[in-house]
Length: 175
Image (cartoon, one colour):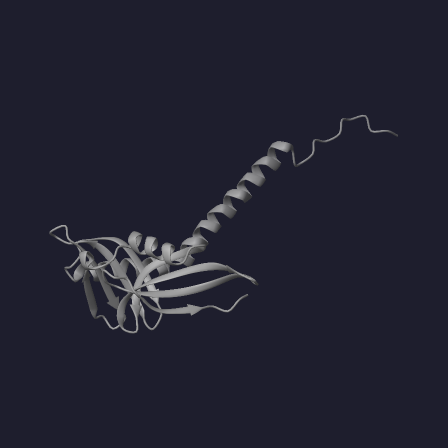
C-alpha cells in the first residue's frame, strides 16, 4: 500500500542553514577577537606602562612615538614634546634609569635615511629606530641588500648626534 499523505518537510531548511552558519561564523569571529586581545594585552600593558613612566620623568608631556629596542639591554625609547614645545628622546632602561637627549642635538630620522641611501644605494631599509648600543644612544638601521645568494640582511648602528657616523655593522647569516 502506498502512502497517500504528503512527505514531511525537512528539518534543516535553507533558512535554518543560513542562520546556523551565520551564528557559527559570528561566534568564531568573537572568539578570534577575544583571542587576539588576550595575546596582545601584555604588550599593550607594557607599552602603556612605559609611556606613563616616560611622561613621569617630566621631560616629555606627550609621547608621540614609542618603541622597544632590544640589543645589549632592553630599553624603551620615547619621543615627544616637552612643556615648552621642545622635542626630546627619552631612553628608559630596565633598571628604571633614564637618559634624555634633546632632539635638536640629533640627526633626524629622515636625514639619517637620506645619508644612508646615498652611502649605500641599492639597499632596502626595513626599519630605523633609536636605541642603546654599547650603553650609549644610537640609531639602528635594519636593512636588506641583494647578494649573489639572494637577499642579505644587516644591522648598522650610527652615532646619535648631528654627524650620524657609522659605529658598527652586523651581517646576518643568509637563510
